[in-house]
Every structure is written in C-alpha cells, then in structure tokens.
Length: 427
Image (cartoon, rainbow, N blue to C red; front, side, top):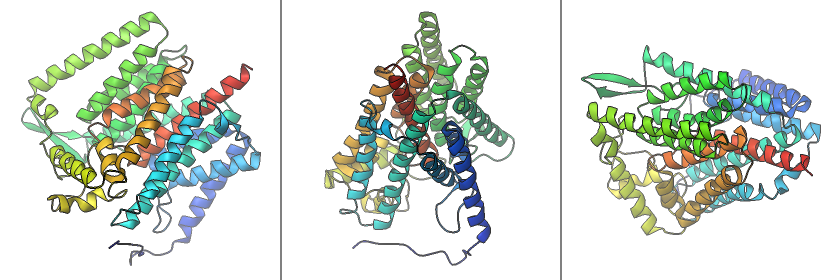
C-alpha cells in the first residue's frame, strides 16, 4: 500500500514577508536578465550555495528557485531564442536530462512511498529547467566575464564559510594523531558534499587559471584545494585528483599538461603516504566503516541493500527516494540514508532504466565538452568537472543535493550555450 504524506506542519504560519522577499528577488533577477542574460546566469551561480537559506512558508521554494524563475521570466520578456535546444551537440544532453526526469516519474508505479517519488521527480525537473534556462541565456548572451566573476565570488564565499568551522563548530570530526580534527562543510550539507562542490569548482578554476590573465584564478585553485583537503573526504580526494588530471590531459600547452599531470600524480602519492602515516589507509580502502557524519550504516551494508533491492526490482527499481525508507526490509533497522553511490542508488531506486539514463547523461556531457569541444577553459572545465563527479560518486551520492546536482546542470547549460554560440559565429 502506498503512503502519501502531504500534511502541513502544525507550527508553520503563513508569513507574508516570505512571499514579498521571493517575489522581489524574482523580479530583480527578471530585470537584470532582461537587460543582459549573462547577468542572470551569474545570479544563478551566486545563488546556488543558499539553497536552504530561506523557504517560502512550508514549501521547498528557496533562493535559487526564485532566481531561476526570475531568469526564465527575463528570457521570456527579452524574447530570447530557444534555438540552442535544437543544436546537434546539445540534443544528447537534453535527452539525458529528459530521460532521468521521465524514468524518475515512472518509478511511481513500483514505489511504496509515493510522496518521495514526487519530491525526486520535481528535483529532476528542476535540474532540467536549470540546464534549459542556462543554455538559452548563454546562447543569447555568450559573455563569459560575469560568469567567471560569479564563480570566483561564490568560491570565496563557500571557502570562507567552511574555514570558519575550523574555529567554531564543524558538522563532524575525525580522529587523527590522537585528537579529533574537524571535517568542515560550510554552506554545503556535509564534508562529502563540500568535496563534491569542489569537484565542479576546481576543474573550472584550474582550466581558467591556465588561460591568459589567470593569476587570480590560480590563487582560488590553491585555496579551494586546501579547503577540499580539510573535508577529509576519501571520495572527494578521488574526485579532485580525477578532475585535475582530466584538465591536465586536455590542456593544449604541452608544458602545462606535463606539469599538471606530474603534480596530480605527486599529490596522489603524497596523499597515500599521509594516510599511511596517520593510520587511515585501511579506512580509506574499507567499506565497513560507519559514516561518522551521520552515524548511519556502513557502505558495505548499504551497497548490499542496494543490490538486493535491484535484484528484486531490476527494471524500475523500488521507486525514487524510497531507498532510505525501505532499508528496514533489508535488515538495517534504524538506518535512514542513501546508498553512498550514484550508480547503486540508481539501480536500487530506478532499476536498469535510471542507471542507464544517468550513465547516458554523464557520457553525453563528457563527449560534448571534453572530447569534441574546442580546448577552451569553459569546455575543459565542464568536461573535467563531469569526470570528477563521475569518479566521486562511485563512493557517494551527490546529485541528490541540489547545491551540487543543480550546480552541475547549470554549468552544463552554460557550456552548451557557449558551444552553440561558437558554432553559429563560425558559420
């Protein structure tokens, strides 16, 4: 029997100030987008980390969603052309987003808990909307300067919010050399999520730093990597190294390519040596450790549960968002979390169909921006960020969090718009 939860919390009161705030934010974004779509994209980049900063009453309408609505309305007012959505290189990306949303909606049929399927379906549609809006906006105003500036500002903001936790209260800790060391998260939901955010940011900043006038971005790369290390996320370490090496392999300058590849390899060896010295190398390789950030289950237990759910429902899984609620049926009473793997989570909740849709979207992004696109910082960064996220999510699930999933789709949309504009300018 399906369970539907649509009740409004008793303590919630309708606050007119919330409505005024969101309407004003949307109208302000509409105004700047109507003037310059590139400014609207910059607003989307700046708003991303504040996904839980303000809600409209009991809904999940937040600052990024209000900004997205404003950008979309601004494009309508400006009558911006949607021709980018028919571009040859963009169609596979659009198809990937549509496939993920469509399959997610279909999982309502096997689901026990229908309300969480609705939540995940709306999230998938939100990601698709972010991609479409960003692609149209940038195709109509392909000015990279505001976007790179916004990325720099948001990076500094996130880094600052995370480093403060070294001296205040961090969301979790790690025993290192006989003392508890904080694992910082800042504006993100947790240390692994902050590391996932840097999986996107570091490749983009690194690719931009290697271009002319990139000194400021080089400083940001150094700060971002240093902050990333302080998350003590093993999946984040894998993602960061994958992203840096991906940029190195795609970089046009042979000297820069060689130096980056060498630096990434040295960093990997140094990280392994540090883990051995701290006595953490066995934990790094283990799947039986409990997630100390949540105190819920081990990866080995969660992965086994995901495989058992998939075997029982191979084609459409057990329903999007249902994994954490069905864990007691897998013998994990009192445990409520995700599968700690994008790929196993996809198989468990959406079967082969959702697993294939996610692989297709990742592959389409890598093919479009990393393999086929010209070697510009934007394309290299977007492609390398996709590779980093793909590697990180072997051991974690990041697309569940809009600050990462939405941010990734935002940069895919920006890169798609840039690719379309570039192709049109050469005709």
